[in-house]
Length: 254
Image: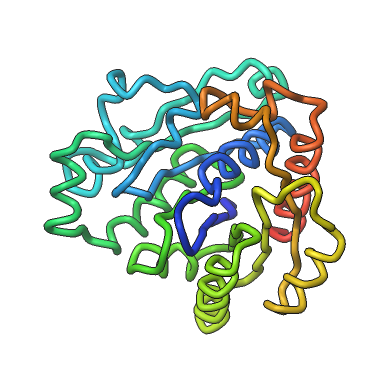
């Protein structure tokens, strides 16, 4: 049975896509079959982290949403040696970076029920253990669907007052939708901050568990989304936190 893990943030710039890619990779390295779908249709880009050339993407999520193909035709099996050697696999469903396709979605919208059907079909077709949904920031119809069908809902926020206040709304919505499991992640925290105190503050504020706190690192900035951090820096403090959080997602998914 495929477990659905949605990763979301109230605002952009939280590093959501980067964490989605690295957490999915960490779980795939344990021998699991992982799907990642980029539903941030207005500003897609997770395929860049996997170094998937946009010019070679012949089918995308947009094509499926507009009835041009089946959902499995949009999936790209990523040949990552560190994952394949352990018996795992990653299938990425990207969204189009074509300006016309983005404008069409913004202008006309799409059938959210079709997206829901596609998510279910992906899990069955590729026999996925986990399907990660990289959502669009903020709250919209697609986000609400992703939250509602999630086995694990992961909310990412920065140590910033705007993020704190906006995330409170998202947490309330998730509870009203009766999400099965909710985990919080604080990203881009300055290394000089008191992580223990921050964890306590965030958990008390939202009455939800903080799965991890990720430091703002120079290496991440230098990498500039040109690859997966967990593969490039396997012994880094950030990578160790990724694996720790990934284990909590697996435990929460059951």
